[in-house]
View 1 (cartoon, rainbow, N blue to C red):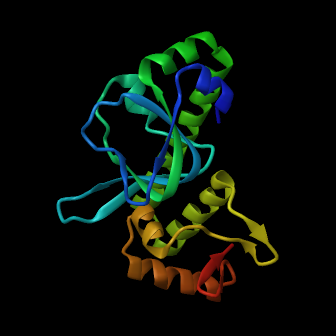
View 2 (view 1 turned 180 degrees about the horizontal axis):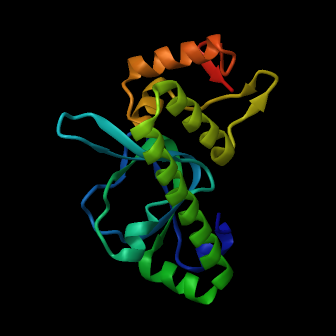
Length: 198
């Protein structure tokens, strides 16, 4: 996360977005760097059958949509607000100036992009070669490690709906439900008040 004060020095504008608002659309050229102050945003697209595929879900303190910004390419997915959000938007030219004048921030951005690329590589292998239970567990473990899910006496609360797990793993929601129940029987997950814990 880049410090808010630093982003504000480079023309950041704070905007509020309500649930289901499209921040940017697939196929459009990028104009801003986005960093979430509060709320939740998903990057998604749809196949020819109208089925949603979630590329990623982003939370407070995370940024999204940078690769096309650096490449000057069109967005390969849309960004949609999942929970009402406040987002800092920095114009592309100002953001590039920020990076040129702050090499340590450039390194942080590279590390962040490398982490996301690693996740996509791991998940591509998981989706193409493993059984549903393994896919669900791997996705959950990655989310715990990277999204700061809350931990209490029951374990880590998995802040994904069954539908989101399906959309992130390429599984149908019915398959996700069966996999979660099976993983609960094996002691890998807990279901308490319909919420999933690891």
